[in-house]
Image 1 (tube, rainbow, N blue to C red):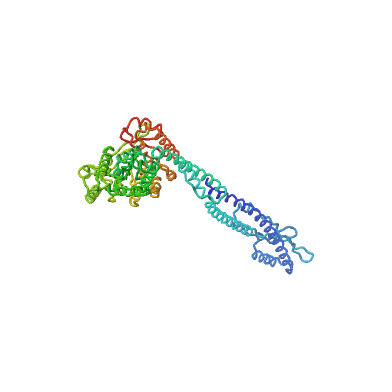
Image 2: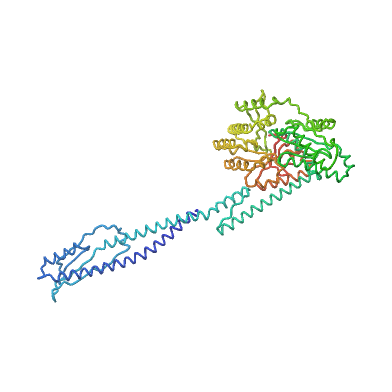
Length: 637
């Protein structure tokens, strides 16, 4: 029974007891009073009438009867009876029994026992008769019944008013209790939220304890995530410059090339400090190290406002910048790198313009890493050999691109979307036992007579602002595919769609239109996008989670120290970036990092899925590290 019902029940019991007590006290008092009044009325009326009858001359019977009848008709009497000294009835007037508004059970419960009034009628010393008079009690019962009803009404009204006011007060008092219940349920679902502390002392203690528990868990997550991040930085970052070392930088570049979305495109810039050995000899090792440290600081400053950009030190003299997506222009980025690094060289008061060479090229989605590095090396060699310019760009081979200008791409993309020439390519995501979790759906558009992968057209769609339209088509197609079969389907949501109110409204409308399909839809957002647009990602979770849709992050691992920012969203899973998965069986440091990452993810109820799994060696070791699922080229159903 709810507290509100219990309050009403308690109020009803209390008011019933109060009414019962008041009823007994007031009724007994009224009964005694009315009985006394009826008795006095009987005596007074009998005495008065007897005196009047004694004064009648000659004891005329007719006159006596008329006098007695007049008295009977003028009052409310049950009977008036005159008997002679021998007991013979001379005159008898009585009222027939008439129904009363007071019920019979009430009259039986509260009897009014008033003795009749008796008086002697006499002429001087001679007794003429005895007068007996009984007033009618019906009106006393009716008055007592009406007063009882009024008492009941006011007590009932008081009970209703007390219950209503008590309910309002109780609701305000126990309102924080609903928050406590929600908080407890959230903790049960491994979502650690805090709520305002109420003013009620008992609830305040409960809420304070729950909030303290949540804060401790959040702090524990932050500390463990910071420890993991520190472990990763120590194993992957150059101790002198703080930049990524060659192997992790190239692994993440390879992961980027293997993606099938807008981030698969991009630009790679490599700057070479050509005279490192001579500089060491000329200015000393310590001063040269300070110069290298300044070069790293200048590169790091370029990516502060771009969390998805990547900087690394490939060897002693080569520095690299990787810019995902299709927005960067190779020549512009190369010139920015050249300018930033020359500022560091100038700060060191080193003369000579030929100390730095910069080469750049754009990424071709799906191309081998060796081909990309070879093309960038050509640009570097050309820059070193060119006396006129220290910055060179080598363009990638664009035979796979059906168009090369924005207008052509705009016409092709809008035409494909208008004609609904869109389909989904599916890749299995399995659990550690090999059972299917869901299919990961990647978009394909029919352009130029063939189905193009997302890595080809997505960068152009991003530049043209068409990502939201593509994602709307993906949602529609995915729900249609889900309705045709009993399997879950996972889709990606881009940053542009996440920030588009129109897309969000369309997504929610489609899910609400088909609520039975929503639990089989998995929606994932890149880690960098979720943290960059945290408010919009939070709104997405709050909109679709109540419908049963699963929400997760993809390409996770490089900003995991911020996972505590998402602890209250109720995420379902994270997909670990392929750059952390490849050759995991041969990298003990990365194994320790992944084991800790999985432990933190599991502590807040997240399923962990490895991306880009290629070999049987990786498949064999990943479950032991805590991975709940896998996907990639090496995964087959």
